[in-house]
Amino acid sequence: MIAFVLLRVFLILLLVAANAFFAAAEFALVSVRDTRIQQLIEARRIGARIVQKLHRNLDEVVNGVQLGITIVSLTLGWIGEPMVARLVESFRFVHEVPHAAVYAHTIAIVIAFSLITCLHVILGELVPKSLALQRAEQLALAVAAPMDVFLTLTRPLLFLMSRAAGSVLRVFGSRKLRQGPIHSPDELKLIVTASRQFGQIPHFQEEMIHNALELENITVREVMVARPDIFSLPGDLTLDEALGRVVEEQHSRIPVYDPKSGPEHIIGVLYAKDLMRWTRLRLTASPLQPMAARIPVMRISQIMHDVLVVPETKPLTELLDEFKERKRHLAVVVDEFGSTAGVITVEDILEQLVGEIEDEFDVPPPQQPMVEGKIAVVLEGSVSIRDLESQYQLSLPRDSGFETLAGFVLARLQKIPRIGEGFDYDGHRYTVEEMEGHRIARVKIEKLEPAQVAQAGD
Image (cartoon, rainbow, N blue to C red; front, side, top):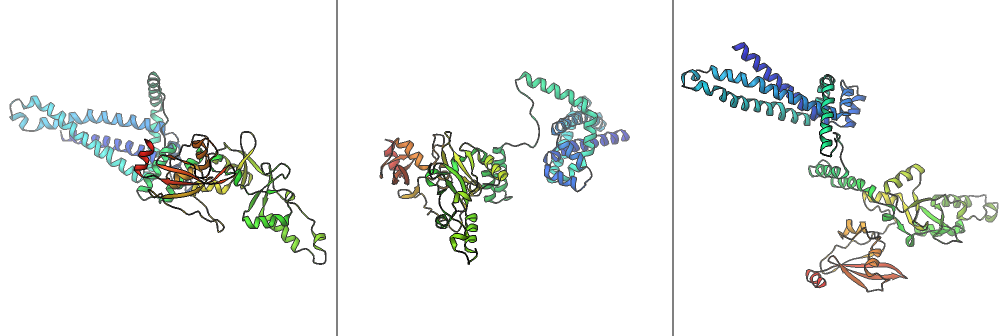
């Protein structure tokens, strides 16, 4: 009797340990990162390549774990219930109490179920899963080899089960989804936000990662410098004439246009460093020769570089790759008709990731808070809708064919406005403050009081 009980207890503990093995294997192999696995392989850790093999086939791992846990659970019930029943029936009160023997089996089932369930859940599930999450790397290396052997032995059965599951899913008009550590951009944002909330990363890194995930959804048109705001030079300008303009404007790369066709026809890009180098050559030429004879008069069209031309619908991620591939920092943006719509630089793209980048020559605009009932801000008409949303929390429509504050005003007024004209929208008043010809140069934005909003609604 004692040998029988000890054998059954040993088998129960062995099955609980097997369940713990499968639970830990699943969580450890799913939790370990690809980059960390590669580091383990480079460090020649034993079992690292098996971990990589299993991590690349998580579908099979998860199916194998479910098969193993199911077999263990059924076997636990099959072995545990008779053993507990034998123990209950061996107690003295079973023979002394009338009719107690009749209920012994029922009592055994209840006690066996409770005991086995506690062992199964605590030692076979909760503890190994918690350890696997805390020590994913160590446990993954430990369980990889035996798990690989188990999968090899049960692969035919797993294949049949997988095909059967696929057939059932097709009946319901669904298909089997791949298991694995794959997350959508929205899920990645939630993960990053949770990491910031628990103090794993600072707030600015959270914003940068969110912006990087959004970059693919932003087109060149949304962040380019519009054509009226472009500083450019005619190609027939001399180097001396161009030098004064470049020093005054403090730009390192300047679009060059065809003087015959006008500023809309950009033919190249002038680098300020090239202009400075040629100027230095003129100044360091032999003093024995007259200045005019040393270096002939040169035009900026002779030292300009080819210009990169991109469509306004190009995503920023693709443009950034093209900038890196072609080693450029500035591109001319054209619309669907081939006309120049604006220019865009690497800095414009980086500002979408890290925020506004200002150098020693930039004059930052005054930032005024949105104060209820008072003038909040007077902004340039060229301010983008994205900047209005991020800096001033103004929610404006972004699918109506305009990308700037001036475009929004024109869309609402449906005419070329005069100074002082305006309208109310979403609790704010927009008033045209300055015009440059037919172009809206500056717009005043006021936050309305609740009474004014109600009156405007009536």
